[in-house]
View (cartoon, rainbow, N blue to C red):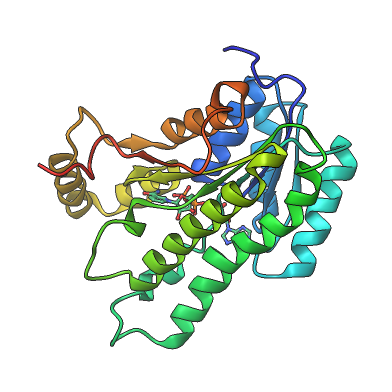
Length: 258
Ligand SMILES: NC(=O)c1ccc[n+]([C@@H]2O[C@H](COP(=O)([O-])OP(=O)(O)OC[C@H]3O[C@@H](n4cnc5c(N)ncnc54)[C@H](O)[C@@H]3O)[C@@H](O)[C@H]2O)c1
């Protein structure tokens, strides 16, 4: 593995499982110092321990501004500054009740926006004063293909992710001249370790569901968390320096038009 992130002080918010956990491990493998922040602190601690001595965990609830400020302050104090951030967290439990506009409760909308969009705004506001102290820095948000796809369900999730895309473009336009790049990672359907474990419990039904996704994807396999971690590592490194204001679809080609 190259050491292109040597000397970089990074934070991954939403890092206890899935894409964020794989990203912490990848950033560490490429030489960075990484704060793994998550509401699931025991999960983040396990990830940091597995990643290596240059990783450490802090607790954060991105729905709570005071928690965000405290966590970012702790990360900055420990590393002596911040060169890059991956804001990746999302509440993926509330998505189970995210049906359609007429059916869903407004509590589903409020919770989805509070974590999946407002939480990203709070994180950006907390990390950016530190990032802007450097001549060059980078912020990567995780959005989703659902922001520019069209689905009859998951209305709130898609609205929140579309908001992240707009947030990212605002930051890229407003602070690009000051050396900060902002980009979005937009995953397509991704088999994370946790998802795989859940699906295995559902046997044949889950297999059928996976087969539908395989058929829809013009690739030899489905996406995995490590596919996204590699892209985030690039965006946070010098290799990604000229990429600003972009939404990077990482989905095996599943959103292409025929
Ligand atoms: N897996 C997919 O198919 C897929 C597809 C498109 C987009 N995404 C996006 O990728 C990102 C990561 O998803 P994943 O599949 O790895 O799921 P995941 O549930 O494994 O990761 C989400 C992380 O966010 C954390 N989190 C949840 N609420 C939080 C809060 N209030 N404060 C702090 N942390 C909180 C969770 O504890 C978890 O560690 C999410 O933004 C998700 O919307 C995933």
